Image 1 (cartoon, rainbow over the protein chains, first blue to last red):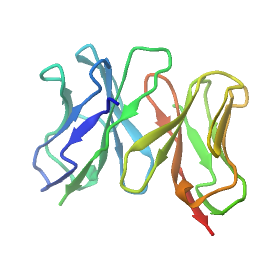
Image 2 (cartoon, each protein chain N blue to C red):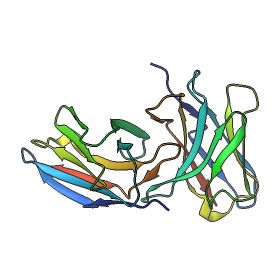
Image 3 (cartoon, each protein chain N blue to C red):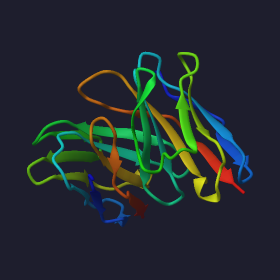
Length: 114
Length: 108
């Protein structure tokens, strides 16, 4: 069964460093998302991406964040200068073009900023 | 801004008994999703509810949607240990707004 994959599973970085989180969505899906979940809290929408551009972004997704689909299969989230409060689980999700709008989530990348 | 409220936030269940988790949301939506999350794991899709009056069942779980009341329920029948997890409802279409989650613990 097709699934969304994410790498790495855990990333530890120092404050101020850049990180890139990678996702491979399900191959026939057209809509891509990043969500984050701070430990013990709810899942929060960050950004949606369709047709090679951002469709919508939340207040969390400030200038320190960017997304890219560099090669037609990967979907990346870059944080330019990490802060302690960026520590969270980051989930990638994708969905196909359908009226169901069901999103399929990857296993997540746990980002720890020290 | 769409607000999604779940209650209870914590639910200690006794094996064999029935329980209900409630999900209220603030603005009109005809799409509601239930996910399960095990500790440290991703979100597993349980149900997709697409219309008023929709009811779906899988094993001991049954979900329903009342779009007029802006309410969905997740009913657990005869709880068993392997249902221990956090359950999230999420509302929306293009992007999802999640509830805070209900952490379920099933005790013998």
